[in-house]
Length: 338
Length: 255
Image (tube, rainbow over all chains, first blue to last red):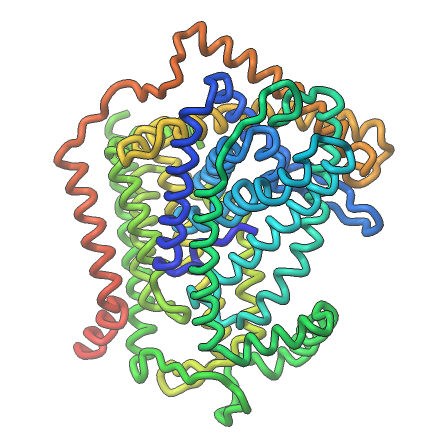
């Protein structure tokens, strides 16, 4: 579910960075007070664990396919929401930096989509209330499944919003949301089930690992600030969404109409139709006659295409030449040294 | 990648903060191009080419890593081809925008990913941590990134061993059966927890006080600032002016 740099505009990427920085500052401030130092290596190795666990494939019952988990809820339950969030940051940063998963610009958005919704929305507002009366197998399963599904739905929706607002592709809001949400409903259910099984096992084997499961006096942490922050986020996202919706009324209507009649199948059919027609409809050189609803006409580099092509060729040749020259120079120098 | 970061070249000796800032500027400017832009993006190819050449970073491993995430962009790009029905004029011909969108996405994605990978392969995790501290990223987060990075290979091997043991006993079935989800991962978590206790004890023995100490200061020199200014100036120039088209026009004028 990582968004890539190429899909986000700098404004959207920057906004998500700012949002993430805010949450991060809050989390690391909270944690300095509440953290006992032995949690630091625990967070580190748990991060490595969740990172490595994404290579493990779980068989999805009845489908013959398999998938891996993201681990946000698992981290929040085992480490608490603040430490869980910071651990997600380290995982996603390493993925962005060393494995090019996501990217620097999109890192803020990815942390928000995968970490914030799991640790600061689904965990405190869904999982915790469900297990409030004390842990039991049933409560853990119900809580983990619902929390994971909600977290992934919010994350997926956020991906759709960020991508559509960025406008790096003309995928309409409706189409994109209809593709993303149902898929992530299924992914969320699996994620929730795996998380639940793992938590049930840990609850039986070592309950003290789960935050507030045994012994410790109940922490009185106020959720007021969190709720206020969430409200602000909701208003912001709602406002942006509404603005966006009014700019593209047909896209939204379309998605609402489809949502009402159990979208999945319809969308797939539509995509199939489109695939069948792909040859005629997406030919590199369509007819001059514009079909109905062909969308906005965008002119780029009006009459300068020849110049553009010549220039492009020259630019690339120039880049290659410089690279080659440096390489040659270096080799000569190395040979001279030897 | 850590081995690459230990290389010795002009790029490796640039202050890590400058490498970081140049990469951020590069990603931001490349991704700020419009959805159909292809030709104006091309001057940005120059940056990775020069860094590859100067830092003597092998091209193959970097491209291999960049390929890992390509499917996602290809997927979105293909959807754009199917659904994007807008029309793009290029000279006297008319094209469907989807294809331009597709090519533009792949080009921008490739450049950004390669620039990030190049940054890491000329900088390494320790100097990255130093740069992060300089821009006031909280100590705790820097420490987390270092610890997580350090233990990925250790824990990864442990998980691989556990999964291999499971597979040898599961007669070639695909994936981990649902009855084993909890116990298998749960066991690994318990072992990981114990390991973290040992690590903590070892850290305490070596004087860990909850803080991150980056070690020796890396001095900022004139060449570091010149490096930053040169690249930023080039990026901004290439972003504002459509250099290839200007070049093409100039050539056409001469001919």
